[in-house]
Amino acid sequence: MVHYIEMKLSTLKDQIEKAWNYKREAEKQLESHVFYSEAIHNAQVGIELSTKAILSLLKIDYDQKHDLNEKHLEKLTNQIVNQRIIEKLEEHGLYNINLPRLLFLFDFWGKFYLVAKYGFETKQLASAKTLFKQEEAKLAVEHAQECCQAANDLLYRGEGLVKELNR
Image: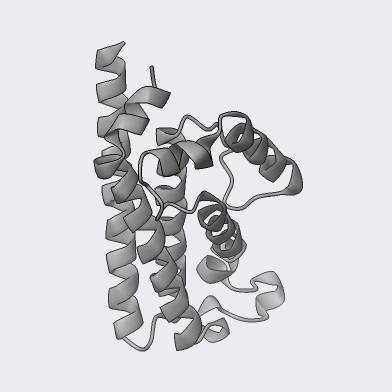
């Protein structure tokens, strides 16, 4: 069992590192002043990977989707409430991991996943490049930073909680 937990933590550590890589790539694209849709797409992937890593670390089951529908959100909410996850985060001094906000960011940016990648392809209405501006890309990168930092904090500062939940 200990070996399984160590393997799981190693895999999630890699996932969080990958999220940071996507966030860094988004920053580069933001700085280019050309590739805003790519910055948003990469920031969204960073948000998704880091938030899903947090859910996994907290032993919360989730669907493999880019955003949340009402049924999925209800499933997540029930687990968070029933397992007292928010209280446990606070008990372990992890006040900066605002799980409801992270889920909001995950859902919000998940709605842009396909549009940031492909634009409005139907009848070639608009390419992704023409839909997004610097302000949106900057916000996406800021939110990716927030989610990646929360995942890092849980992994490295919340080790006691993670081990407690994964027994």
